[in-house]
Length: 253
Image (cartoon, rainbow, N blue to C red; front, side, top):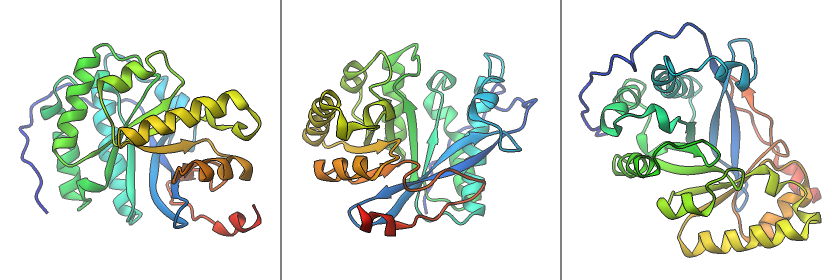
């Protein structure tokens, strides 16, 4: 497998962190063939503490180092768990000062742990405050050129909305759970999501619905033709483990 060679030289990215963290993994389902499409790496404290407890320790001094450490640790742990599907990693766009340099630790980890870069998906939340949207576009474009997949997360939750989508076309758009939950009972959500899915189809963007907790929600997105689903209905995140999914529950829907 060929990996690009990237120069190393960012002292901020290599600065030590004064706190520990690890990951829980939540499966992403392909409902069309009832398989696990991938796993999202969700940051946790070393004893299972919440993501918020970890992220509260991230500041301007350690933001670069934390972002880099997240990528490396997620790949290392995924490799140790023998993850064969896609690995979805969230990243902080404001911690990437120059895409070519800041991706070097990810590429190095992929080589070291023999994890194909084609299986790595980088997510940026739409609610994340992006200082420079043009810079984010450059980051995504460069990542894609290196063979990574890209995703826009929590779509519908932030202030950018369609303006963000107009700036960059990701491989995957993840619909925010606030639009997903109870959609079978909410006509307004149905109109919004139905048109969003249609827009994505025309732009060749794959839609992922997250936050699913009920069979009725799953059935609604199946009816819309949305194949990628994620949520407690299928499995809760597994602390440093890859949860299995019991697809038999779908037989009773």
